[in-house]
Image 1 (spheres, rainbow, N blue to C red):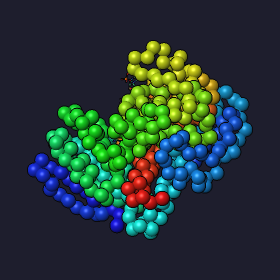
Image 2 (cartoon, rainbow, N blue to C red; image 1 turned 90 degrees about the horizontal axis):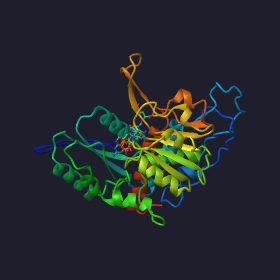
Image 3 (cartoon, rainbow, N blue to C red; image 1 turned 60 degrees about the vertical axis):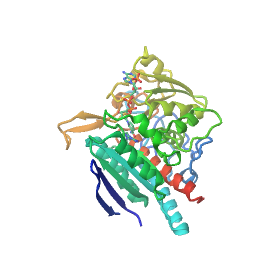
Image 4 (cartoon, protein in one colour; image 1 turned 180 degrees about the vertical axis):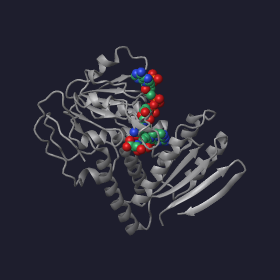
Length: 363
Ligand SMILES: NC(=O)C1=CN([C@@H]2O[C@H](COP(=O)(O)OP(=O)(O)OC[C@H]3O[C@@H](n4cnc5c(N)ncnc54)[C@H](OP(=O)(O)O)[C@@H]3O)[C@@H](O)[C@H]2O)C=CC1
Ligand SMILES: Nc1nc(=O)c2c([nH]1)NC[C@@H]1CN(c3ccc(C(=O)N[C@@H](CCC(=O)O)C(=O)O)cc3)C=[N+]21
């Protein structure tokens, strides 16, 4: 049976338990061939969406000739993610019919951050839509580290849980490293365990899971027909969850990778050399149009709330990249929202399905 089971852990122990269970949108003059995506290199990733892609992504129309106009193709992460999710729905249903099991994802949320609550809600909704069972543990902000570790251990032992996600950031008083280290390697669908990360970094090694956002970025490039091998890539940001694994993954795909961070001198000059720019900084509009080489492909991971009295909630989301400028210089660009974000969730579902297939030896 599919659905969400909500577990609320409190300081006094367990209290409440209820069981409820494409695409390039506009086009450019750089002549992309929209290919069937090759599977990710030497990584254990299901081929369900790479081999049975149904959307017709191309071909691109003729080049724009007015240099003041938009030239970049918009990489439509939302529709690519939808396509992937529909493939996952099919696989979950095939699994259910064949062995009577569906994948299970457990999400642990500590505290009351509005953004984290929204992200977690979106992840659970996405699980429901594809038929993955979700379990959620909500802990109060002032929980102890041991209480969180206990919840992780429970999910580690629960055979119906194939993936465990500890929503980050954790409250300040908690040791993130200690908690992430306890997630069982076979259930680490975020790919944040140091062994998964180490295996991602090392030649000839295979991580069990690749972190979702970086995997989503690569998938967007591959599905948009962007060649990675031999290209110069710049990753702006080096966080454990986005920048670092993205640079490792680009290297695995044989790009020549530079990393720009808060201490980098002349970041614009380094970025301007890149054929592929991935930005994961968290500062709105830090990447200006003049940071980009004409024809560069831009993947904007940044998801930054900026005040906007004209929008419903008084704010809107914007990327790290100054979109209006970049769209005139780049050959392809992801929008925010609607670019990388939906792919992160699709990759989480994919990793969870992958994990369940591995656990049940279902092919
Ligand atoms: N769409 C999605 O699915 C996701 C989006 N995000 C978004 O991506 C962004 C980054 O997230 P995350 O990686 O977690 O953030 P972190 O704050 O953990 O990391 C930010 C990185 O940016 C670098 N940085 C900071 N200032 C500058 C600067 N002026 N120039 C160059 N580099 C700089 C930092 O460098 P240093 O290491 O030197 O401090 C650091 O490596 C955020 O907007 C976040 O909301 C995050 C996860 C998923
Ligand atoms: N353990 C853990 N794993 C994560 O993967 C993780 C995390 N912690 N902590 C926070 C970041 C952030 N993150 C996002 C996921 C989806 C969108 C997303 O779907 N964004 C939509 C917009 C969503 C909206 O409108 O609010 C979009 O860009 O179109 C954004 C950001 C995952 N993270």
